[in-house]
Length: 324
Image 1 (cartoon, rainbow, N blue to C red):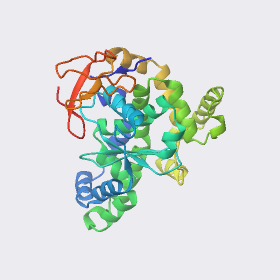
Image 2: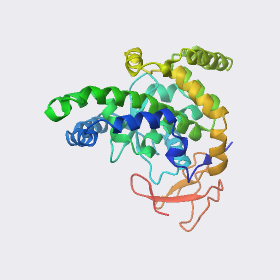
Image 3: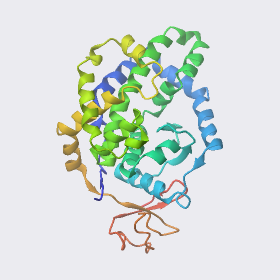
Image 4: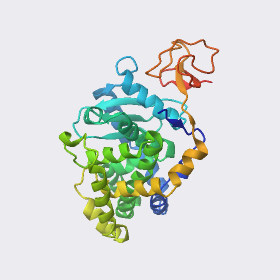
């Protein structure tokens, strides 16, 4: 079944209320704008980006056509006007992340590529694209590099007073922002079952059981039991303590929150309000349809692919920026 594009979708429409509330608390930290500017000027984020550029394999359409096609279709679903670069992280865990603020890169692990089915990968990619779409990449970087952030703040006496307040609040927000990212992942994958199985695999589902469809209901029942613990009513300090040393914290809780979004009508409403057939990106020089099942050669004047029938977004440049 073809995916639907959501060309007029705004990130605030699928933003989780916990995410919004937590970010408001971050923004209320005294001198937050100064801290963010100081962190950006420290070069921490630029160093991280250079590390990825110099260490990991970049996904190109010629070398990894299927993975590249999944990325381009995910971008088209969320109506991106360019395609972020994708790099492969040599790690067995299922993982994806963003590096960079002004020109972000997406990093996906070998474990994710080897363990996830097509719609599961779209869910994972959609989650990272949501971080770009929200415009909160600098805050995400500050949360991901908390120890460096505290080190940067500690060097400036003006920030010492707020460093502990900010670190608590930005970690809390980073956790809740994942709930928004999960919603975006579902909007890209458009397959709730695949989203849940991705979370199960991240939570430790053994490879031998990947094919078992009967495990999803049990996982969602576990999520219901987790809700009964009342974690969201606990203090920030308690939640932070409970999250320590967890590689993928609160995956079960996130599954429940995504179930609520899917079942309460919000997901259906957004799909019905914005859904259109996904367009295809076509390079203006090469003129080949990048739909992996098509590959037709097209006239530059074409508005729809003669092979697969999809609307064409003509692109130019290394980042496949849309030109018309």
